Length: 165
Image 1 (tube, rainbow, N blue to C red):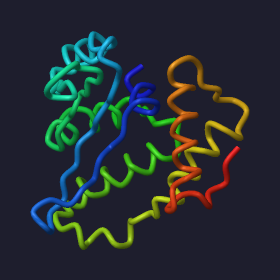
Image 2 (image 1 turned 180 degrees about the vertical axis):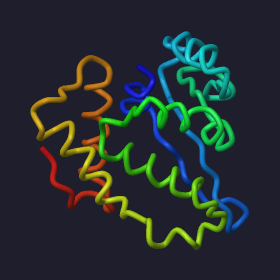
Image 3 (image 1 turned 60 degrees about the vertical axis):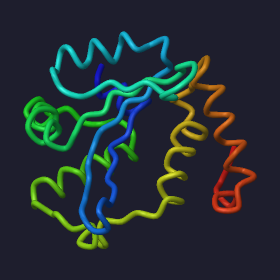
């Protein structure tokens, strides 16, 4: 169940901090109405922090953020031990990259040059997975969000050359 939520509503973030170091975290983002799902996941794994957004005003999004330490000490060993894998190619790439960084103790962001994937390649994988495979139809609010995202990409200067449905 957890890997399904991460595949559909999460991502593994690998970012640069303090101009040169690597920060890794796993984030699952849901509508505030589904905060009980994140609370359940947090209570079972006993890791992560739940945040609500926006910070002021009416809350409409909640996120479970799992730190690098919890990933390397709890979640990733659990996934490896039980031979659990991600179903989407993008999440699998993120997972393997994070695992590589952790296992090889890579500290500097500049050392990741050989692992960098272009944003266009990753966005094309997502679009191909949900729009052209025929096996993974979205429903309800997820479908509406996906269609809104595609509409935005089609008019953006950076991504308007992607292959859209």
